[in-house]
Image 1 (cartoon, helix red, strand yellow):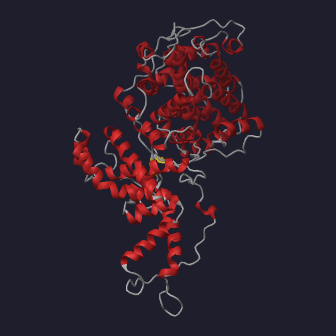
Image 2: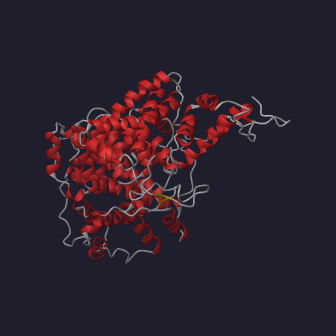
Image 3: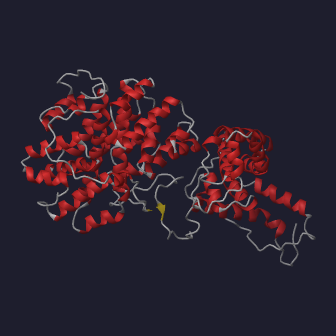
Length: 598
């Protein structure tokens, strides 16, 4: 029996017919999901496109990949199922034992061995995959279609593995007498070492899918065609199955809410250190009305996010399933039942977790670049990026970070209201100038200032000193102002990280300045002139100029506060300075006769 209640769907249920044709019976994994027939239908479509259809990889090679993956994950259900399937395909027990215990290359060709090793590495340590791994496959004559299919099979293996652990499916056959190669428990618990973040796509980019229905589906539900699905355009059958899975798993509201499922996708992607999917789903949550700072708080530690206790318990449940599936048990399911979740909701949480594993695996194998500028990258940024020095490309380490507010923060977190008042007094001017810089209205800035300090007080316990307190305050202020700006009509967006060159600005009066306060203005008058010019800048440039040139924040702190990458911040700063320089040129530049003009 599985962990969840089951229903009788009848043997004429169409997906069961498809499973019997391929497996010869209906596996218990799918009988354990009968509470949600729509989910079984979507999984059958995905299995049909990836596993059942014969393309460049043979059925036996796909099954070998799945068995090797199951052994690497020590998943008893999947080991027993793949072992039995390969026996039916005529593979001798000695070779099966070799796959399970790690000696899997004996009777394979070099190309098959390379593909199998690649798929297993992707399925077990996806963050270690890079363009070089794909290039090595192509160099030995493996074509793009075979690499694509190996990636999809690895994704399917991770999907099925998470699903079987989450629903507690009982093996359909007795497990083999030999066990997977033992692993060092300490190494199993290690987080994979981080490598440089180099985006793809790794395979030849195909044309976008030509099926109008697919294009309509993605545009209606995402607003665009994400790079993850664009990279799979050579497999329209898989895209169709993935679209059906999104419709059945994510875009329904009869069990969990859409918001709960998006949070699961985000939390599991963060657990899997998948920058692409974290960035995509933070953007989707933003469209659903969740502030960017709240989404990234969930990414950093969902327990510090402002959620109901039941939602925290739900995320604890899925993160454990994603992080330590071998320790997942009936007790975890029962704990969530005590929080008021029905079995249908539990099942959907497991399915969303498994589907996220599938998407994360496929994305890491194909390597498409994020559709939006990531606010957090789980892997190091390459140090040889043009125009970016090594110092600017890295955030300070904890050892380098000395926060002058540290003592006051610790006292305030301990309940000392006087310490919090001291922090407010210390940073009120900077917060106000940041709010004024974004909103451009003193009255609105004063109102937003109250909201900013209230939010800081409410979330102070969750401040973990990963940045300076002043940077954290500016981040709250900028997000508070940004939210007010979004509510205005018309909206002036601060979030556009696209090409800065499409706005039509070209400096026309950039000339050398000659500072001569005695001939020009008194210092106060000149400051007022500059401030007026700054306030006329577009908001997304105005706030960057204020933080860097007026508040003297470092590039790293300003980028962190605004949720921007350092290259994007530098681009906006340059354009803002040029706009400001042009606006002030008539007042500060010499005329042809050498006089400073007013």
